[in-house]
Length: 269
Image (cartoon, rainbow, N blue to C red; front, top):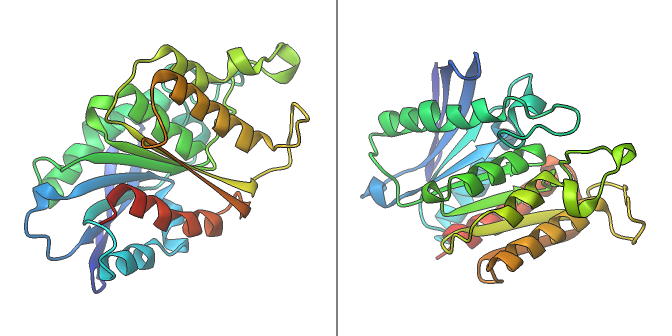
C-alpha cells in the first residue's frame, strides 16, 4: 500500500511492510524533503509511535522549518506501533519486572533487517549522511536502547517523556534507584562513543508520582539521573540537550511543541 501527498517542501507517503520478526504488518509514514540534489547528503530520522505524528501535525512542523530554511533536509520515518507495543518497545534482552519488552529484540531486528533495507530500496539511497532515532514515552526508551547498543549506526537520539523508570524490580521487591533502572545500568556498563548526541524532553506535568518524595516527579528525576550517568561516561553539555517544559504534559500536543527544538538541535543551520 502506498498513499502519497505532496506539500510545498515535503512529500508524505504511507507504506506497509510485512515483518517476519514482528509477525505483523507495519505501517510507516515517510516525510521526504523535495528537491534534494544529493540524497546521500540527507539525514535519516526514525520515529517510534509514528501513528501520533499526523495528530501533531508533523508534516506542518517539518514543512515550516524547511520553508524557513532553519534545518538541513532530513528524511523522517514514522513507525506505527502494533497492538503489542509494551512488548515490542523496551530494552532488548532485558524485559522489565513484569516481563514487558520481551519482543524488543525482535523489534531491533525489524529495524535493521527489514525497515532500513526497505527505506534504502524505496528511495534509492544506498546510505544516508547520518541516522538518528526518536520516540515518545516507551517509544523513547526503545529509541535510546537501539541507538546506545548500535552506536556505529547512529548520530543522535531524541527521547520525549521517556519511560526511563523501566525497572528490573518492583517497588515491593526491594527496588533501588541505583541498581534496578534498566537503561541507567546499560549506560553505566557501556562504553563512551564520542560522536553520539542526546536530546531529552520532559514536562513538569508528565505525571504526579514522586517515589522518593523529593518534590520532583519521577519522569524528571529519572531523566536527570540518566543524564548524570552519561556525563559520568564522558559526555558533556555539547552532546546533551535537556528541555523541560513547565506546562508540558505526557501527550502529543506537548511533544509537538518540543519537536521543532529537537529538529533544530539535530539538523539546524
